[in-house]
Image (cartoon, rainbow, N blue to C red; front, side, top):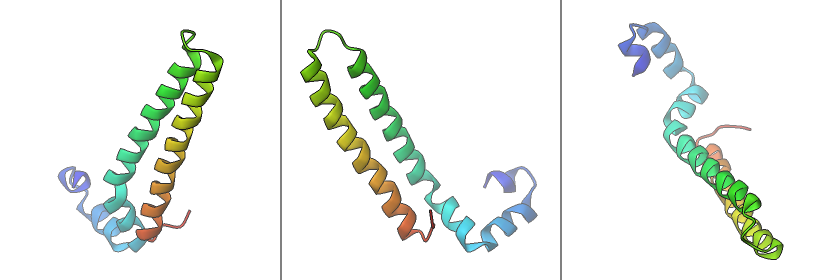
Length: 88
């Protein structure tokens, strides 16, 4: 849509003609959501790592839990990419 609005209709048509690029465009909102989720989890991990009010054991348990969630979210990204036919 942005290409079309910017008067680049030809580029938009070329982009949509390529099946893999079309899949990327269609998947973009889902990938952005996953990216934002992963960014938030990393921020929580950093906050926890720097939180001196927690014992080292509590921090380690919290970080391990957050890293598991991070891995699960990343796995969702791979599932979306595979279902969209995007090879990584």
